[in-house]
Length: 324
Image 1 (cartoon, rainbow, N blue to C red):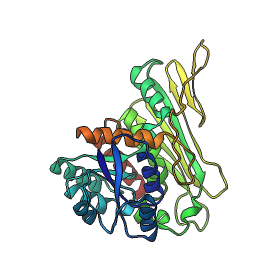
Image 2: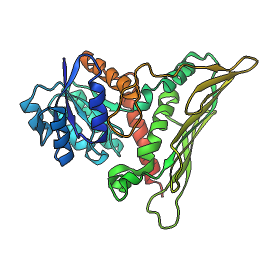
Image 3: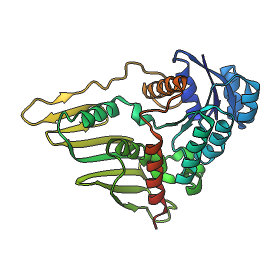
Image 4: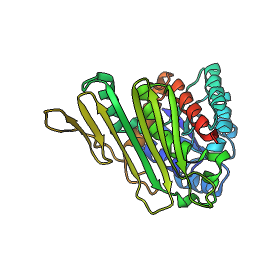
């Protein structure tokens, strides 16, 4: 039985705990945190509560630490968990700087444990379909691709840490990171990157970006936005293969081959678990956490979210964030 200690019992901590309840061979054994909400959730879940990871690990039998705290606390919490010799899951982004990400993975190696970064998009059916088509070459090589991830400004965090560049990395690290992780996992490190961005008058952060990544002759573009508008959440992609266009319209994934009928892929989650927050039931987190649990049981890294992939993504985002 894999005994898990959750660090930070807020929104994502609640999502993870809700999914662990459906995964065989694991259980949430304790919570670490300092907020009133953390204490309330631990009481609700019926598990012991501790102020720090060290106290939790010393007092309980913990096999894996799952860190769901705000981004600016990730390095501190990850390093503490790894120093204690525990397999560790951390929510994305792992860090805001390449140097910090490298230090975390290096410490995991020194301690002989694994660090898993929760890039949940890799565990969706849509990503599974796209990954399979790119790798199999069924429709030939990719000639062009575009990704969109757009939403209204996250008012739930108004004046909070999410709007502090030093704490969150703002839109590139919070939103675009999902698509960039998929892009890097499929095509590797880009040869060149460029982007445009904009913001309304008086805004302290950039609200919309268009990115261009070049991989040899392949161009991949992406758009990400926190619009100052009541715009519905939209996540789509279109990939042009040599012999077909494959589209994820946010609801279905459809391939349009030349001289053949369109092919609609089955992307329905077989298991849909309530998240415990204002997010519809989904199988994403079940697939992600099940994968990490199985990898931790074997003491192996994740083949879907590799160390090099994570570090490359952070390095690219750091470059984008620091551009004047």
